[in-house]
Each structure stands twice: as C-alpha cells, then as structure tokens.
Image (cartoon, rainbow, N blue to C red; front, side, top):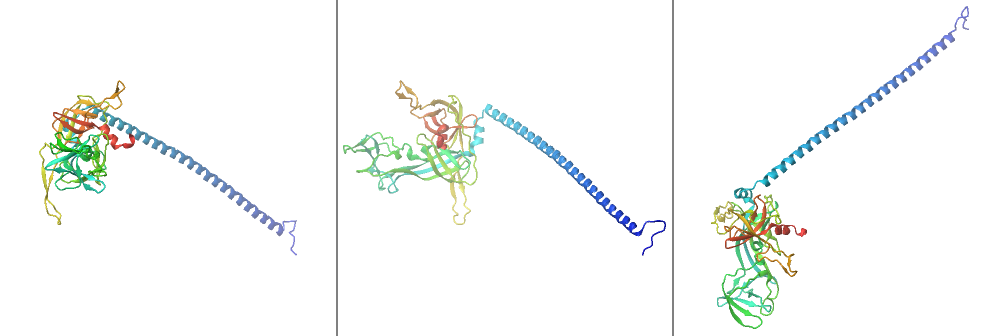
Amino acid sequence: MTPVAAGGGIGKATVERMIGQAKSDNRLTIVLVSSLVLLVVAGLVSYLGYLGYKQQQVNTKIVVAEQETQRGKQQAEAARSEVERQKVERQKLDTPLDASAIAAANSASVVYLEVGWKLIYTPTGQQLYHRFQDGLPLFVRLQDGTIEPWLTTDSKGNRPIGGEHTGTGFVVSEDGFLLTNRHVAASWKSRYEFPDATGMVFDVGSGNCTFLATLPEWVPSETKQAGGKFLQGGFEGRNDYLYVTFANKTQRILGQLSVSSDRHDVALVKIGVPGRIKPVELFDGYDSIKPGDSVTVLGYPGLTPKKYGVVASKDIFNREAQTRVVPHVTVSSGVISSLLRDDTSTTIAGRDRIVSVMGDSYQLSINSTGPGNSGGPVFDNRGRVIAVFNAGAERVTYAVPIRYALELMNPASR
C-alpha cells in the first residue's frame, strides 16, 4: 500500500492526472495555434492571389491600351499613306504625259503578231480553194443575188482561201491575254481581199457565165453557197499559226485565238507563259472623250523598215542559226478628229436609226501608221488605253472604243 503523505499532501495519481491534463492542454494549444497559422497563411495566400489577379487585370488593360494605341497609329499612318497616294494620283491626272513618256511606260506591253490562216470545209477538214478557169477566178451569183467566190476542195490549178499578215496587240492581263483586232486574229470573219481585179461569174438562176468587172465584198465565214454544183456543209476559218513577239525580242511565242467579237473589230488572244507580264491600263472614256483630245498610238506598221536578228542555236541537235524579226515599237501622235457614233437606239421621225459607215469609231488625225499597226493601243494623254487602232484611209485612221473590248473581256456584264 502506498503511504499517504503526511499533512494531507497531493498523491501520485493526482500528479499524473495533472500532468496528463497539462499535456492535453498543450496539444489543444498547438492545434489551435496551428489552425490559426494555417488560417493566416491561407488568408495571406488568398490576399496575395487577389493582388496578383488585380495586377494581371491592370497589366491586361495596359497591353490592350498599348495595342489600341499602336493600332490607332497604324490606321493613322495608313490614312496618311492613302491621302498621299490619292494626291499622287491626282497629280498624275493633272499632268499630261507626252508621247515619249507613254511609249517608255508601255512599249514592253505591245506585241508584234505574225498570222497565217485558211478557210476549212468542216465536213472533211479540207482546205478550201478559189476555183479558177483559163487563168480567171470564178464567182457565183446565188439566188438572192449574193456574189461569192466559187469554192472547191480541189487544189489543182486553184488558189487557196487564206493568207499571211502581221499585226499588233497589247497585254491586258498578267496571265497572258492580249487584245487585238478581229481582222488580225480571226481574218475569216472580216472582208476578204481578193488578189485579182476581175473575174467571171456563174449565175445559179440562169446558168450563164459573164464577165465580172467589180469584185464582191465577201466575208469567208458567212459563205452561203451549198448544194447542187457547190459544196454542201459548213465553212470555218482556222489559224495555221499565230506568233507573238515582244518588243526588241527574238523569241516567238505561240498564241491562240481565245474569242472574237460578233459585233466589233476586237479579239482576245492567249499566250501561255508561267511568269506574269505587265498589262496596260484600260480606261473607258466613251462618254467624256471629245474631238481635239490628244492621243498616242503604239504599234508595228508595215511601212516601218524591219530589223532582223540572227539567233545562234546552242542546241546540239539543231545547230542551224535562225533569222528573226526584232520588232521595235513605232510611236505616232495626233488628236481625235471626230467621234463616229453608230447609235442603234436613236431614231429620226420614229423610223430610222443613226448609222456610221465606219461603225462606232474614233477618227484620228494620225496617218503614219498603216497596215501592221492594226490592233495597236490608242492612249490618251494620261497613258491609258481608250481605243484599239483598226483601220486607215487616205490621211485619216480609225480606232474602236475600248468599251467594246471591255465587253468582250467581261461577257457576263453585257
């Protein structure tokens, strides 16, 4: 038995309980303090996170503001650049160009064309010939009075319908489209030039053959004769070749007729080139052009003496040198003398419309061009193409308004 302390002192069990209670209180204190510390730390972390979030928002606003400022600067700079560009364009429009400046800016876009064509009998694909007898060309007078050359597929003693000629064209798109005249690129759709002055005509109605003093105006693609003594079927023209050569170059590029107008003397030719080529600027000034306006024509008239270049072959399979025409642009200046309007909408006394014998055309005071210049660009004094040169007579020449070429280039707009 454990003795009790004298004088009623604290026993061992009591001391142990007191020690246990003290330990328990210490643990509670530690837990409470730890929890408090955790709460403080969590609060501090949350506060710091909140501060970071607020700072991020501030930084975002700063970045956005800087971007807006930069965008505003860029827009202001773009606006200033556009104002300067428009100012330069206005200055260009206010400053007429002389012929030499127009030629320098556009000669590289004006091409020399060499064309060979023939008329085809479509059922067989054979070439058609003009029938001759005793050295004279034979013609036929059809039932409606039309006179045409007597056509045959027999080549013996007869002359082929076709020909060879040169012309001018100009680049209108970077991918190789060229504008020229219809009578250059699709000659069978234009009046045929007979090499003879006289002939004999067979009258289908009477069966008589008489002397023909005046040769008819005939368009090969519009041939009517068929049946009986004549060929039954269709007639169509075809280019044997259509070569395109750029100014001051010797390399020929094979071109293809793309489309020709049904109403006007304009046609599109396409060449296949992988690179981009510089087009001229087109301007439809039909409603604003006036007689007296100055114009410049570029092209390759046949009356200009030709230059030739000898191309030495470096090909081991063909060492033969070749001689090529080296085309150089001729520059001709003048004014628009007259506006020849073929107005199909205007009537006189409700009956007749106004018709120009030259079609809807510009008459020019330029007579230094001639055959070979057909299809060349006609520039205004701002260096824009306003017409396509297409015909000449004594001391005057003519051009088709570019409006009709634009219609051909954009058929869906008509």
